[in-house]
Image 1: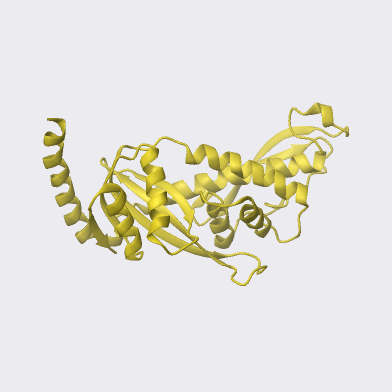
Image 2: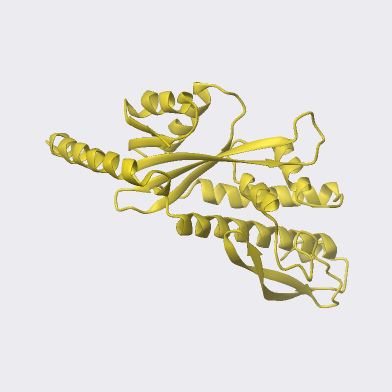
Length: 267
């Protein structure tokens, strides 16, 4: 009886959304909300990386006094605001008692980060990065070479941040799944320095926008998207009413495979 009651409601919602999408097109996602999501993600990562830089300077991590071999100690943080394309973000800059710490990811007198670096930071949230790929991503954030030890510690910090973000609870039903992408470049160590990151947004039944996941596509196959959608399903996303994308039809076929045949809109 529950399903019989739900089906007409779902059909009505789909009809309404189809009309709305046709009318509003690319304005489907609220730009201010998307920027707020990006700025939060960037802020969390940068703050974590700065703390790892401080650990490298002092030679021991917080609360690990057994490996302490210096009289210098942490001396709290001071708040600094950095300008990004998503708005100003709050950074907690670490301080040491002797004033020897010179931050690298965000320089002492730096007041903004460029869009290229923003995209690299967002790409670190991608679910399918290997350890080697993540280390390359981390190194590409720096203008100068960093030590293997610092790269490894930052990578582990990023893994921790990513894990918390990727395991957060999701809604059972999303009215629209919207697939977007962005491209960025890393240091040309390989034959193709260009990377494409896909961002899957979900619009809830009450109109809120959520960034469901970030992915780096490694093969141009429907199976890739099926794996992504099945992971979302395992995290509690039981249904998607409409998919909306500019991507190839392989994503559309994956949505139909995992969630049954849907209404699809190309923007």
